[in-house]
Length: 134
Image (cartoon, rainbow, N blue to C red; front, side, top):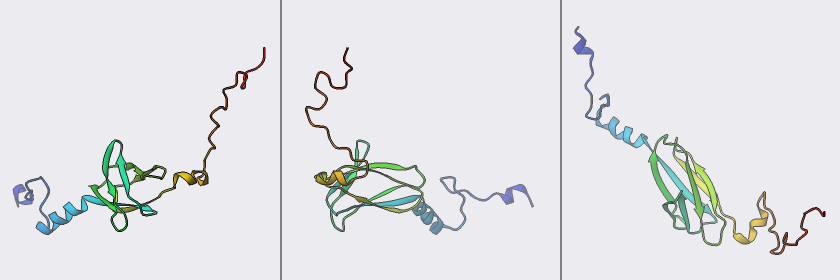
């Protein structure tokens, strides 16, 4: 047997042909992940990736679906809705996933862990506020 008989043909993109066209289609589908974003309560919300608008969660039964390359790194997004606090979250791209974001109304922000009460407008403006006397 010669060395040329051991070489397998390559596809146009450099991938080895093993199982025909069905394998190529499965490889394309497997190279992408589908991320589904939804909110609780279900309201219209914008999903931002940095300054880029990824899309809009349009309401009930209309979540935002994004396709990304598999294993392309985490996707840090901010979900913003009118009347609610913005939520920073991360979606991973190693498998298909569903991200449910719980939104908190602005009026209920004191119920969140780590909430700090806002200081009154005149707090800390007195001339002797914390300064030692000399």
